[in-house]
Image (cartoon, rainbow, N blue to C red; front, side, top):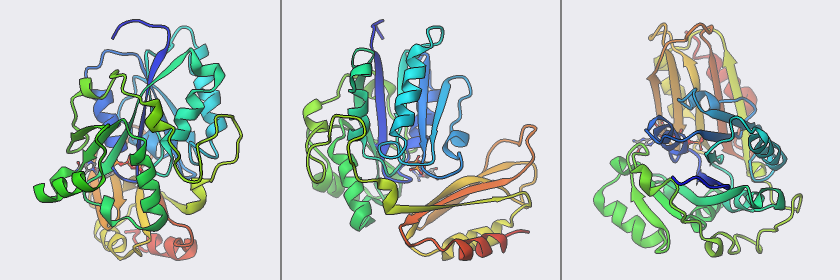
Length: 323
Ligand SMILES: Nc1nc2c(ncn2[C@@H]2O[C@H](COP(=O)(O)OP(=O)(O)OP(=O)(O)O)[C@@H](O)[C@H]2O)c(=O)[nH]1
């Protein structure tokens, strides 16, 4: 990449559980040769995404407890300012992973505020699509996923291992856009030179009306709060959980609880930190590394449609999984 004064920024977007963090981890562990800063947006009250990002060597900024394009916009502005002011470790590239409920065009708007205009250049909005779940989304969730797709310069059609070739072709024909670069992937495996420093940001596409009108270009303007469409709940526990009980409990959760993720201490896998994901009706619990000096624990976040979360019932259900 040639040296230049403005820092390229890739905005990684995509609905809850589409595979954004998986793709980001691919990028961070690849041989990109850049001093990279990543900004991750944790929608819930606890900092899960930053625990799921693999690399410890880059600058990582966590924008927690709200939707990056609504409630934590001021945090984004402040943290970007800090990155730019750090003359010694100024990043050569910035990747912003939006939460699954964010509208990336609003983040693009923030990057065009006067204080960033010369310092940052948006390289692309990259939207990850879950090839299996995309067409199962309904109502507000479908609307949000469509908004994320509408403004994409690059579409990564992920989880193609979960669908047939016929389903992939049908999805492409129905939903994907001719102006966007389209890449199919499994576990976010995409050629880096097709996604980083590609200069594909299309201002026309990105600022077309999303819902009720063009996105405002001034800080603090009234915007719908995407967080208001979803509720989150978190669970923390120091005792190990039973794998069998946890799997069964996840399978029994109501369909409106769309996403859960986090770190777990599992009785059947002592000494290993396990990562739990629920996306739609699919769940997985996988052992990863050891606890590396930290006390074993469980810390999970659950995200559902507004009104779908019964905190007391969830507390009872998760506590019943203690081994
Ligand atoms: N089968 C399959 N699973 C995948 C693929 N990519 C990601 N996953 C799984 O999908 C789940 C969600 O992946 P994440 O990368 O955490 O998704 P995300 O978009 O960052 O999720 P949020 O930040 O919560 O919106 C995890 O269990 C991943 O292992 C894929 O290509 N195929």
